[in-house]
Length: 139
Image (cartoon, one colour):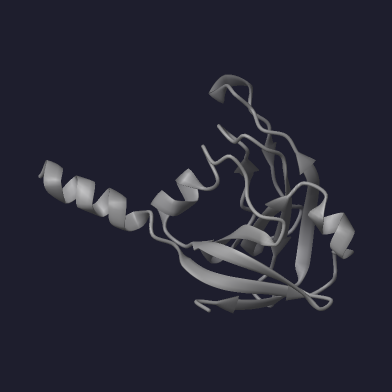
C-alpha cells in the first residue's frame, strides 16, 4: 500500500508542458491539472524563469480562489475563462508563511484557467481584464 501511495505521489509531480501566448510573447508553463499538482503548485521552489509559469486547469468554470502558501517569491495571478479571456488579475500577490494568516485571492467572475507568473510580469506584458490569451496545452 505504501509503495502504491509513493508511486502515485511521484507520478503526480510530473507536469505536462504548455505555452501561453499574448502580444507576441510566450510563457512556457507547467500544467497543474490534478488535485495533487494544484495543491503543490509552486510551493517550495526558489523561483521560476522570467518566461515561465504554472497554468492551473480546472474541470469547469468556477470562482477558484488561490493562496500563496509556502512560496519563496511573489507572483501575478491571471484568471481566464474557458475561451482564454482574462476575467481577473491579482498583481504582486505575496507569499504567506502561516495557514492561519494567509490571504486568498479570487476573481469576481468564473474561470477555468489560472496562470501564475513572476510578480510584475502581467503589467510588463500589458495583460488586462478582457484581453484573450492563447493557450496551448500539452505542447
